[in-house]
Image (cartoon, rainbow, N blue to C red):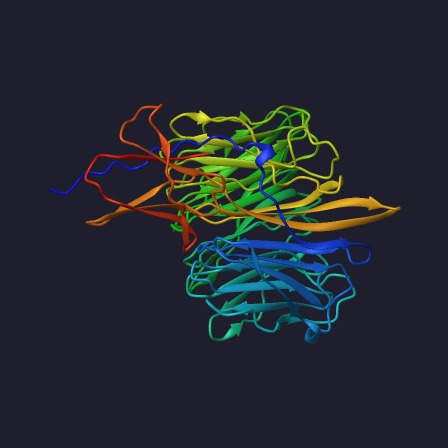
Amino acid sequence: MKPTWQMAILVLILTNPNESPGADLLEMGLTTPDILGSLVATVEDTGACEIFWSHWLTEQEIHRVHYDASGGPSAFSVLDISNTQDQVNSLVVSVNREGTGLLVWTGQHGLYSSRREAGGDWQPPVPISTRPSPFSVFASNLGLGVDSKGNGLLTWADDNGNRIFGSEYIAGSGWKDPVPLGDRGLAREELPFAMNADGRAILLWGRWVLASGWTLVASSFVPGRGWLAAQPIYSSPVYTSPAVAMNDTGTAVAVWLEKTTAWPETHLYSAQMRPNEDWQPHVLVARDNLPRQPRVEVNAVGDAVVSWRTAFDFSIAANHFLADGEWQGPQVLTSIFLSNPIPQPSYLDDQGNIICTWSEEKTPSPRIGPLALRRYDRASGWGEVEVLPFVAPVKGGVIGDIQLKFNREGSAVAVWTESYSNQGIVYSDLYAHRFWLPSPTLDVRRSETHLTLSWPALAEGFRLEGSPLLNPSSWDSLSEPPHVIDGRNSVTLPSNGREQYYRLRK
């Protein structure tokens, strides 16, 4: 008779700031005119990570660092773009689950891209659209996605800012000619873009006409059909700050703000669109304390989470939607009067568990910390605030330009700068740190003779414990050191035929 094994119980203890891991210094001592230009990062499904950045107006090259799935920076390189005879003003990158990616940037006279096939390297740049421009930037508000077949989709506003365009990348063929998507009049806000693995995409844009006010418009892209007719979602005298997310089934969730005359109210609205259906009527998500800068995420089953900052009392708040229910109500996540709070992306798994993150940037004395989070467990509710201690000044300077990226599993990277003064000159250093964002789970696999336990290698500071009983006093640390295999810490133990429990503890 085969022995029966019981799998791990997870115990999570918050990180002690005195035991914080170090960050990787990517570049040091940037000064004018070599200050940081554009900065983007992506975390692939494999756990590998790419970071790109440019220097403002001084170099015709793009700097890159690559991280393996479980290690530190393994490759520094420079993408030579001198053949474009143009500068770098804004970068955007997208990599699909198979590892095929596109890197796109705008210069003064054109849009350009570099492609990487799965397992390959980034190729020399090719033009997407070029022409002489009287402005300093050819395009703005770039949106980019790559589907599972390696096809890409790019959206942008022109150099004047009012006309919106899109271009398709066809794998094996290249970029198609740009197509006009709309004219947004006097509007100059962001152009939120979301694309799923099947190649469906949503672009939100606002049209502002003095005589009629604001209209929020959604443009939908369907593979094989192209861009569909733009669809108005909402109209009002004043609206601002749209955001959108889409899951692999094609369900899209849009959020936006409407500033009302009843100060201090600002209405935060949401609307959903399911595949092959029209947008549903909008619903109120929040209205108190002047919501600003909303961000939205949606999981595979259609649950959603929106986070935002409040301009009235300088806090971070959130609300989440259950696919089988409704919006659950706003939750204030922080104390009030934080120093310049900025909502960062939220992590939402398919079980409805949430991690909301935020930053306090460009202040010498953040109330909580430069980067912090709160976790929501669907069974137990919201946990306490956790500060991510690796984002911290090294030279007594000010933290800024924080970017947080993660993949579906929770492999994450944080990138930031520290600005400091030395003898009257302001310098900036660029840092990055890889880590595991959600609570790690312990995977248990067995054979006739052995038991193998593994957990993400980026989940730092955890130790494996075992016990024959579910008794708090009976847990012992296992002496076998883990070996990193395919990005996971792995421990193999002989099977002894007796019941045994395992857990991770920090």
